Amino acid sequence: MIEICAVGGYNEVGKNMTAVNVDGEVVIFDMGIHLESYIKYTEDEDIIKIEPSELIKVGAVPDITKIEKWKNNVKAIIPTHAHLDHVGAVPYLSNNYDAPILGTPFTIAVLKTILKDERITIKNKIMKLAPNSVFQLSKNLKVEFINITHSTPQTVMVALHTKYGIILYANDFKFDRFPTLGDKPNYKRLKELGKKGVLCLIVDSTYSQSYKKTPSESVAKEMLRDVLLGTGNRGKAVFVTTFSSHIARLRSIVECGKKMNRKIVFLGRSLSKYCRASESIGIAKFSDVEIVKYRNDIKRTLRKICKRGIEKYLVVLTGHQGEPKAALSRIVNGELGFKFNPDDHVVFSCKTIPTPTNIENRRILEEKLKNQHVRIFTDIHVSGHAAREDSRDLIELAKPKHIIPAHGEHKMTSAMADLALEMGYNPKNIHVMRDGQILNISP
Image 1 (tube, one colour):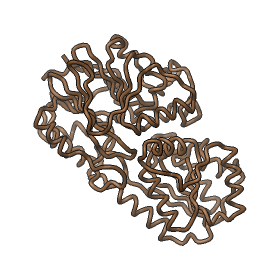
Image 2 (cartoon, helix red, strand yellow):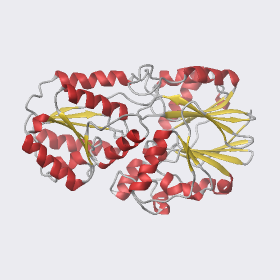
Image 3 (spheres, helix red, strand yellow):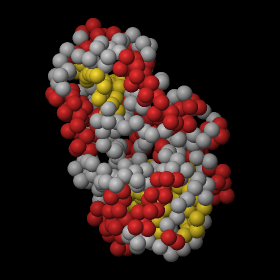
Image 4 (tube, helix red, strand yellow):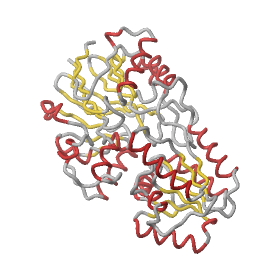
């Protein structure tokens, strides 16, 4: 018998966690935070030491009481990649389970950096598994990491092999045939799994309403080149903000900075965290970048580069969502002793994550930048999430019997269900779930 519990990420974007119970053996996929609720409660975007019960109460981490009866049967916790909405709750919740944490080398490097920085101790054994590798969890359960592309390195889909068939967990992904860092998706293995028999596909629904294929990261690289190398910025400050976990994007920015003959400086704790993790496992080097972590050091660094000539530097910094405590907002608010001059450049190599808080924070930040007569470049970005046509391709490759739309608000998961109906699926085999719901799946 297979039971699937939608612990988190089925009512909202974020807080992802799914538990699969196969004949009394449980595997947990992802253990993430809901970033907006987390920041609202902690006033910080970094993982810090705080009581898990409080975070559950405010909706910042998944409500694990829903799987309390499965607590002693958990065989593994598997975060699929290094984004905080998939791995950020591990420091808070994993101690509830006597089970190892299994992830790709980059995911594990980021997790270890978080635990070390905040002096958080977990009792779980931490294990690394390379993309496209297999691990025998128990006599009856085997997990396989399938390489896929996303907006952070070493993201995987996970195939849970059971005697009833394969549960394929695909949260998050995109099909990028021209990645700028890492390997292409393992289409061949997905096709083989489809022939072998995928019983159930649990799939990212974030952009299921978007009727297109998500563009390659190589497109974003060209967009950056166009803005950084193709606009008149001689003698001007150039600041770029993007997702700290997007190592491929950061390397593209560094490449552009070198072609601009500017020294590159990274400002912010989360940038330091992800860059250190990527260097520790040899994914990407940042020895050619000055990385400054703490507020007082950032203040000193900004004074130094102003003295030497701001036009000689390309500054990459945190704050792409307008977070009040991030480096960019602090600069704009005059907290770090730096003032923009008219026609200085600020490039947002990101999308505004569409939550009320983020939208409002970005609106406030951009308004303040406009008042300082700064040139603003927004949406220099392509998504790391599958759009509708990518999802169609995945379904055609995997040929699952059952489909569970995940990672999204109800309108997103419903749109994924509509796609499955459009592809000829029986409505009985399409399962739109809500947080806390448990579903029995039969072969």
